[in-house]
Length: 399
Image (tube, rainbow, N blue to C red):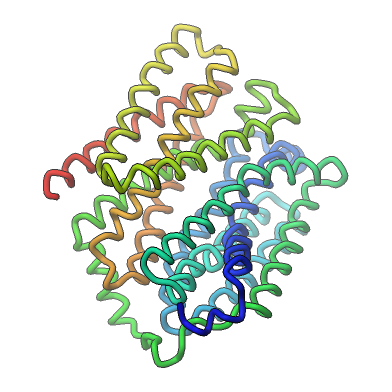
């Protein structure tokens, strides 16, 4: 570890990076309990349109990812994070004072665009300070803390709704981002010295981007990652409707949603223990096959029961699905990055941006078919596994 890290203890560094990374997840999941309130306030006639409150933040994020990763290699790590927080705060203010649904969606897209910086740059900061197993251990701890956020964010949103309106959740997001920004600005030194920065050059950036697309493995798993992320986004955008309206769980929605988030956290832990022994291809194939099989069997059960199934059955299915998606997502990102490490900054930006854009399109498409039934989600999860299995099988033949 370089001496520049001495300003922070290892524990403080892990907590600080977790707080920074969590801005995006908190902005997404804390809003889920408020979707019906926002829908009513703006008089949204089509119930599925509320899903845009979730997907719009990812659309902004997809654009931001492409910019911040590349900028951090040229201008240092801290300035792009400052810029990201500034844009996030602007988007938050726009959302708080939104007078129309369209204005709210603009604010959400700005939040996503801004949150992309704090989301991806901490990985580069960790890479600057730690190497090899040390970096892997630190990143694992950061991600473990980060993945607790989806389990508690809906509860935070629900708690705020008990004493305030949905605008209060955005105020909380603004206060949280200011706290995270202040802590980061005061305590975290710049980790990329000027002499190690890459000159900002459009021809060089374009060359790196083309190299990512020309690499078959990177391209294949960039698409596969988009499919798996699309399944997650389809679930996120319909979760409030499924839990609160279809199953009529009311205020218990954040509890069950948080529990499923912990299932994905468990999947990440299990994957970290098994992937070194069995390999990434093995884990992806098994995860996709299990999810395809489970979705097919559950779809038959749903159709036999005329789309009216008990909640416990869906909870069991969703737990298996989320566990499998947790196995898939991390491995496919690693596979996509495996052969483009020499252009890691640009590669992370391109892969993150393209896979997110694919996911937004898929998530919005599946969500548009929601009809007070879990059928679209179950079909979507199953169908998305076919290209993932094919891509993994084809790539595995060349390993």
